Length: 252
Image 1 (cartoon, rainbow, N blue to C red):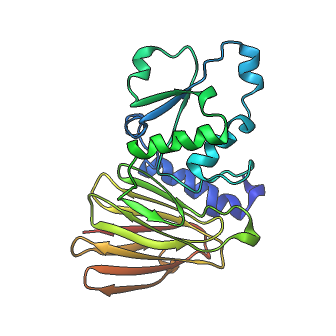
Image 2 (image 1 turned 90 degrees about the horizontal axis):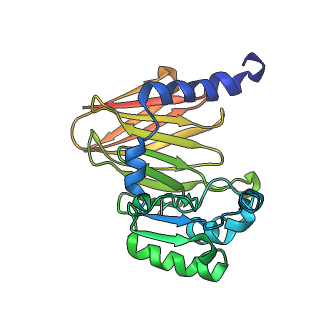
């Protein structure tokens, strides 16, 4: 780990620590509840099954549902439809009944078929009311992740976002994320609100918090805090990433 230097000490290690300490992974039940649609691969030939499982086969689908523009793209541009799992042909009927819609893969592997499939999903997944903006936002229960969707530095720009939370001291978070920047936000078990934020060393993160009442903002490390500006039920928080990851806690 030492050979990785700051990449390990300021990014990877703090990320792993926070995932474990604050439970920054949703439960299987929470994820399953959000998955309303599935696709079944009806092929039975194992060699064909493994040989053709490449992104080429899924590109029309991921392009239509997630706005993926090129085959090397990792971060989706759209999260309205959450995760559409692809089930193997041997999946039992009982498992299929957990979904509102199950469609064979060979019926959605062209651009025209994928477009029609997306139209069907529009009726199942209404436009999200709990998040929005230009950035990618993934939200499950009290946990939200925000990423910049552009993976080519020369084309990247700041992307705006907003996320609402149903409980805790923070009602809404607004801001923007730049190239390779990410935010993880969660309402913790003790009721406090937590933000794990990371960015390049020469960058800052600015967040606008809409609060449900009186609250206290704590930043770790303390030296990372640039300023907090209060206005009625809102707080504007600015933090520096000279030391890497910044943790923000909001408590009532």
